[in-house]
Image 1 (cartoon, rainbow, N blue to C red):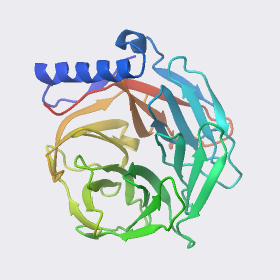
Image 2 (tube, rainbow, N blue to C red):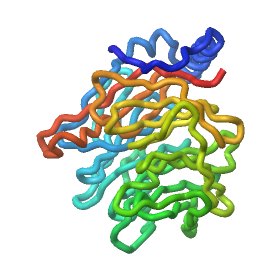
Image 3 (cartoon, rainbow, N blue to C red):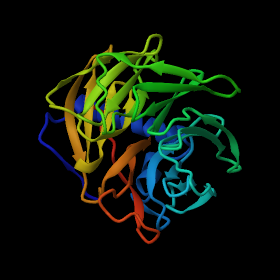
Length: 320
């Protein structure tokens, strides 16, 4: 495997040591050594025509990926690269973003169908479906688990939806205000993660490429000032580890790695990561010292014969 990085300040020895320690601890906690994890495959296939979008990894070395073809979920063993469909999906359904909780439940964004689904990753059974919006012209894109709710973005409306976790309840509809700019006829809110203090959300708006800090009490959005970066155009999936924020910029075939300040009001670009195997990656998940990304291949024909895969690149932590 090869990867390339753009010219940005190089990591300090302290940063490298910290990253190595974090990776080793993560691998050891999972019951494998760092050396064993290093021998695992760095690329594995998905079924032809799967049309992937989201990826999530929980406490065990399994990646779960959703299909925009029919809402199916595919699980791959990271140790071997072998996988199978665990949830067959349904014609007319899509799986965009997805997150796995500690109980093995998958929370899945339903795209243009306006839904949030919960699937049992152990049995593959559909647990429940929330109809977040009944109107056309919406796109439920990504999801993050924070506290007692799963929060979903809508790329076509300035609204976040919070559904209860582990119980049946009402959907919370949070209207975005403050600095938020809703641009017509393009993807707006896309990837989402929790803030380092766990009290708010960070949302990327794909066009024109901005990051926002969202207050969960009011929906007030504060634009995060980018340092050493003009924008995060084509921003898609987000991943946060401590104060390191990874922004996948899909059609640019790169990951921008930012160092957040303690209040998540500024983000300093530390590095960009790219790889020859990237083919419009959309979302990212972490296991041990690797980042795993699905190639959505938006610029290729999306047919039943189109091939798709997932690739891994080394983890880089931006914070000292």
